Length: 225
Image (cartoon, rainbow, N blue to C red; front, side):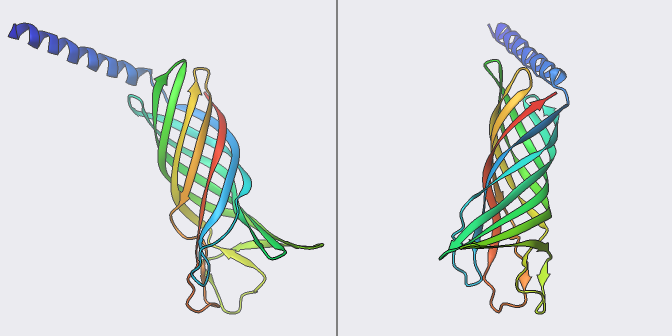
């Protein structure tokens, strides 16, 4: 009886090992292209330490990624995206809309489990972004003013007052879930949370309590080949 149990255990272990080896052998490095919409906001506190009351703005993202197998069902997925973010703020009859453009590198760990004729996907990891440009549009009545965003880490006392400043670097976290069909078409829901403040040190303001971060979510469609 004991010999049969040991034999059965050995057979099960060998079967599991062969299945895992087969899964690793079947998994291949693949490339993906994707794009979609962003619903983004700038959250945090203003110079007085009060909570920001911004509204979301609609943006977009587009880019590529590479999916590298690590162990069965788990992959490392670095990518490169162009992504637009920002926020809208309304005070009295004046509305100010900030649009920021970033080059981003997400570095995600992805789980892919077989579900139906495709794969359920769940991924998370950090991202690093660098500001590529931005504009602020201020509208009140029949008057509209557009200014460029300037990226710098420290705003000096003599810097222009009518320019909006942000730091170029952004770091945060990604979480996404989605589904990939057997033909390579996939869809996913993405969320992002900025981990560092993107507003620079402003020497024109004493006791500056501001802390501004990128937050938002999005929907992506893509193809993996």
